[in-house]
Image (tube, one colour):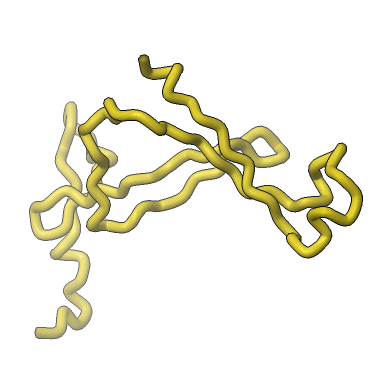
Length: 103
C-alpha cells in the first residue's frame, strides 16, 4: 500500500515536559541508529561511521590467548625499513600482541 501524501502520519515524537521530544518514532517504534567513533579528523572532530541496522555488539570479553591489535599503513610512512626489501608491497601490516592489557 502506498502512503501517497500521508507519510507524515507514520512518524511522530513523544511530548516531554509539554514540548515535542527529540526521538523520532515510526509507527510507534523508536528509530535507533548505532554509530562507531574511530579516531579524529584533522580539525579535531570525531570520525563517525553508521553501523548496519542488523549490527549487534558483542557482550563477551575475550579471555583467551593471542589478543592482537593490528593496523595497515602505507609503506612510505614507515621510516627505517631495509632498502628494496619491501618495495613490492605498497602497504604493510603491523601487529602487536596486547593480551597483557587484559590479564
